[in-house]
Amino acid sequence: MTHILHTADWQIGRQYGQFDSDDAAMLAEARFDAVARIAQLATERGVDAVLVAGDVFDTQGISDRGIRRLFGALGAYAGPWVMIAGNHDAALADSVWTRAIQLGCVPANVHVPLRTGVVDLPGANLAVLAAPLTQRHTYDDVTQAFDLMESEAGRVRVGLAHGSVTGRLPDTIDATNPIAADRAARARLDYLALGDWHGCLQVDERCWYAGTPEQDRFRGNEPGYVLDVRIAGPGAAPEVERVALGRYRWSAWSETLSLPTDAQALADRLAALRGEDVLKLEVAGHVGMPGWELLQRAAGEAAAQARALLCDFSGLLLEPDEADFAQLGASGYVAEVAAQLQAMQAAPGDDAQAAVASEALRLLLRMQREAAAEGGAQ
Image (cartoon, rainbow, N blue to C red; front, side):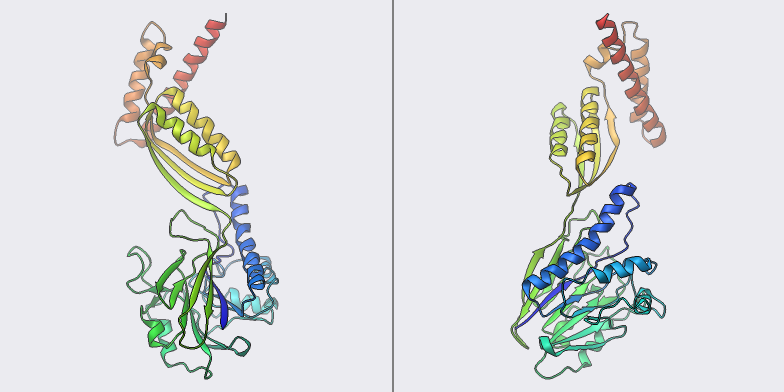
């Protein structure tokens, strides 16, 4: 029995510019933590090897400290690691990989093939046919070389590559770095371990994408896993177990409010967020002033308890109800101004004007409400 962990797309050094600096730092740190958990899992499960299918690093420009930290995070597992370059960290003549070698921080048990070839692991009865990318984009199938590669007799043959399986991924993804859908069969592979697609995905019985172990974008394609793969021997079908590993849950909510109860329902959902949640929230529709204030409080409280919260209320129109208008004064002048602002925020074609009008309307209603409260207290 050959027993491996398959993982990919660690994206060490990834930046999170859409978040504030504190949240961005924690999300970047989570990627190092995920690697350490993979190493611990490999030891706990007694695997024969860990295979990393590219994009170990998110950028060639990662700092020397970041490189050292990455290889330091592998320390909990003393068995063999095989990791290849992907499109983000391609094995160029001068790359993050050559710097890692120059820094002397690649442990002896970590195999980093910089060209296509076989990494033979006799202790695991495993031959890893590795196809690192040597440029960011190619239109040639680098795994084609697997078809003619020989391995020691009796070894389990596992391919390790980074790219897009032809015809099996959504049409919107990058079409570069293609991989033939039947490569495992053509190359007599017992298993083909892939990276590039950030979700955990089975292509066929012998071919899988592990996905990124720590979610890093608002896409519901099942990230946050590593794959535990057991192969009884050459020719045997692999037994693949998805192992949840990710810490943070990334979600994207798109809400349209129309009823008075909608604001409360959304506020209740926001109250359920916890420290592992990363949420992008877009809200459209219309609410009265009480609903608006309720959502502002709910969003503020949720931002304090979630890991990160991105809110976009630009599509939410403020529509004062009868109680709001009743506080605008008997003269009717302020009510007329409010009606004009309400029309301006709903006018199509000028988003900047609509945003200014919405904010002005909220300030007007708030000032009138405060003035009414002060008058009642006298």
